[in-house]
Amino acid sequence: VEIGTGVMLFVAYRAMETRAMTAVKDAGYTDITLAQARIGQRIGPAGTRLTDLAEQAQVTKQTAGFLVDQLERAGYVERVPDPADGRARLIRLSARGEGVADVANAEVALVEREWEDHLGAAAYRDLRTALLKLREVTEPYR
Image (tube, rainbow, N blue to C red; front, top):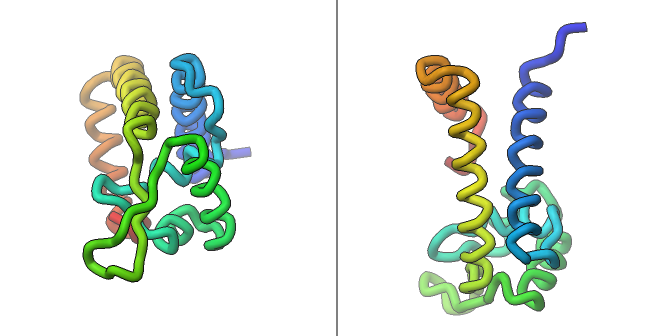
């Protein structure tokens, strides 16, 4: 049975995600869950509204709120006023949250170097070019 492209992309993503979470745990951030990390990775540098996090993660606003509450209690995020709308709040990473992101991002960069070494520079560049082109029709949050 031939494996679909979507499944192959998911398997590669899951392998990278697992490596990043292992690095986070090994760095001492043992109280963050995968579900929390998936919400946290969607927080933009200036902060993101809860409704946008929920939409991007494809979860209900209640689920996103529950996960953000947990992240806030653990000190990974903070809620701040939205300068564009005084009634709204933004979720942004705290210093502790930035620390987790730094660890995860470093591991992702390591995985990408390993993939490039495995595929070869030209094939890896072609893969990235194709995925960026595909993103034009698949990613609503680019």
